[in-house]
Length: 407
Image 1 (cartoon, rainbow, N blue to C red):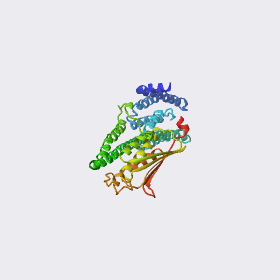
Image 2: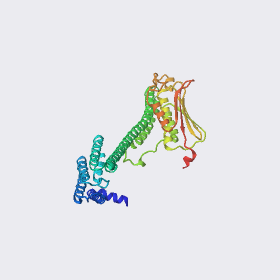
Image 3: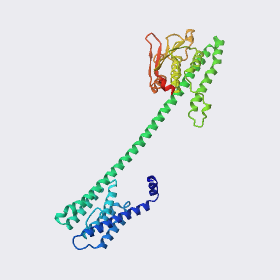
Image 4: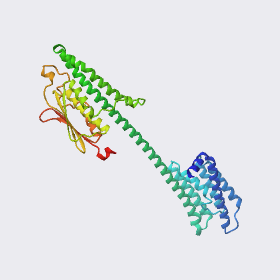
C-alpha cells in the first residue's frame, strides 16, 4: 500500500502540493480560532486572522522557486497576526515554519542561518511588544525557539542529504575504479596468455629452423626431418592462438573454441620440445588428482614458459619436470643442467642462446608472467641458478580440499 501511494504521489506532484497546503491552512485556521477562544480581553477580529493565514498558506505554493521571499511573506503575516493580538502558537506559525524549513534545506548555509535568525528576531520583537513581562516565556521565547528548532532540523536534513549524495558519488567512483582494475587485470591476463602461446611456439620454431638451416648442407636428412616437424609446431601455435583470441569475441560460439590446456597435455608439450632438440623428462610423486580448470591452466602455462626459457637461453639438451602432489598443494619443479646443446657439441652455432643473459633470464616477461600466475592462485614462486649449475624454477600451487572438489 505504501509503495503504491508513493508512486501515485510521484505522478501527481501538483495535487500533492495542493492537498498539503489545504491541510496546513486547516491547521492554521484552527490556530486562529484557538487564539480567539482563549483571548482574555475583548474578542479578536476573526476575518483579519483568516485572511492573513490564507495569504501565508498561498505563498507556500511558490516556496521552491522563491524560498526567501516566501519566508519574508509568511513571517510578515505571522507578525501581523501577533500585533493583532493572536497567540503565536505552532498552529498559527505553521506556514512560517514550513517556509523556514524550506530555506534551511538550501546549500547556502550562511543564508539559511541568517534568515532563521532574522525570522526569530522578528517573532521575538513581536512578542516583546505585545506580551506582558510575566508572559514573555509563552509569547516571546517559545515562538522564537520554534523557529530556531525548525531551522536546526532543516539543516540536519540537508546535511544528511549531502552525506547520502557524497556516499553515492563515492560508491560510483569505487565502482568505476573496480571496473578499471578489472579491465587492467583482464588485459594483463590476455597479455600473459598471448605471451606464453607465441613465445613458446616461436622459440621452438626458431630453434628448429635455425638448426635445420645450418644442417642443410652437411646433414640434409636431419634438416629435412626438422623442417617436416615445423608445421606441427606452427599448427599448434595457431590453434592455441585462435582459442585465446576467440575468447575476446562475444559472438564466438563456445563449442568452436578449443578447451584450455592443462597438465594432461604435458606429453604433447614434451614431444614438441623434443622436435626442437630438448629432451624433457617428466616425473610425478604423490597421488595424482584432477585440478580445477583455472589451476590446471596455470600449472601448464608455468611448465610451458619454463621449458621455453630452457629452449631459448640454456646451453643444455635436457630438462626435468617434477610434479609433487600432496593433500594441500602441488609443487612444480623445472630444472635444466649446465651443458652443451647438440648443435654446439657438433660445432654448430646456437641461434637461440644469448650468452649475456643465459644464466639470468630476468630481462623479459617470462619469469614475471610465471610469478604473476602463481601469485594469482595463492601460490609461491622461486626461480634462480642452482649451486651445482643450471637453472631451476620451483612453484607451489595450493590445491582445493576434498570437500571443495566434491561439491
